Length: 223
Image (cartoon, rainbow, N blue to C red; front, side, top):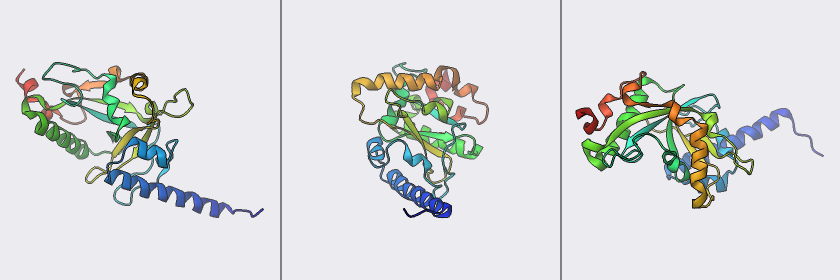
């Protein structure tokens, strides 16, 4: 049997990680789905991709804190007064093309502000200034997303997915994309509880590291 040197083994590992990076960058560019990712690299293998040659930071550590911006009207619906506090439905995007989060350990205040500005602008373009904007943030650990399902497979992957002017961008993506729709509410509940969203959620007024008040829907500013 041919022996493989330690150096050769490291080269093979690095090559595999580079291939995962190439795939992940194409996945980002083409707005791929959770199914695309799991089909090519099951069991969250893409988490070990090398840092993006653009501006990436490399794999997301379990201990990192991730920030999700809770918006109106895509998450909470200020107009109909529904879901003004987060519910498990906030994780719907992870079943599809990924749930965008910010890696707070690495993000500058300017990047956090820029991200909020973009998200708020998008919501306002869809729903108008009165009801579109940011309601709050949820800050949770990457580890909370990596809990196991009954199959002993992890429910979610947390991927390094830097974007232009947002090097600290990451995505939470379901690792089990073919789960029947009727089972998805239970999975959302488990992840919601694992992240302790009711405890870690802050309204815009309670966020201290960056001023998000300019991104409130004007309906709330008036009140």
